[in-house]
Image (tube, rainbow, N blue to C red):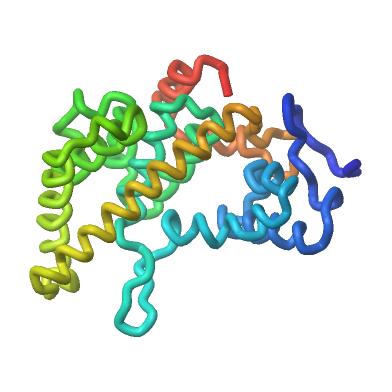
Length: 255
């Protein structure tokens, strides 16, 4: 049993560094570095399955956090920008009412927009995500279509139509044509790039539908003042009050 201080938990106790072998401890530390150097219960609960936590960070980074990445002339990651991905993650997590995902990605997205000098824009986009379709003036055409797609995939993937796919392809290509690098692509190359974007987005949605359920069923807790790092206080300091209030209303005190 760990000798470290630890906050409350219910169904599964998050493991601590001194609970695990050296290789799993290294994986936990890698997970912390990926998430801003913040000790987190995501990787500490995953640590019950050592191979899982050892592979999860690189796997998740490939479609969540990796920037535009090339190996030679081949783009291998970063097909959609981080701002769009965070909107998709939070929209999915709000629909699934997943406490850990909602709180943590409200923080991640707020910090992302703030660091880019887009704080007020990000505030509005994050605030209305739970009913994005009722606030078309807040979102770009691309964001609206992607968020509509996100909601359908999250609720019932069988409801996604060929027209939805056509609309998604159109809005992604239109946006891509505003990018100097992507605008140089010929028709075939652009079509393939758009398909890469759709594959990445759809995997991101599906991954968070899985992760949301995992957090909820295992009742993974936010890191508090008794843990290695106090996420709860940071969340209250960084995430605007109206977004925190919206989150609390939707989550209703559940995991």
